[in-house]
Length: 70
Ligand SMILES: [Zn+2]
Image (cartoon, rainbow, N blue to C red):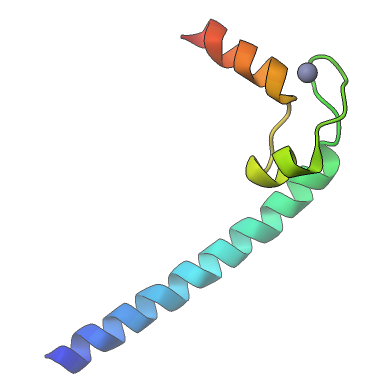
């Protein structure tokens, strides 16, 4: 029974890692195209693009957009 769970866990981890790799690859492509804020045109810092892959706004505009949405 333990073996079964070990194998299931290993399989689960492999699938999770593969999913993360796919997501990271997709995020890199998205991030690469969004170097500048959609709203104000300011450059989006590399750190922010890594922290929020696929982001379309600089942190100022994003904060403002989230505030208005609430
Ligand atoms: Zn902006």
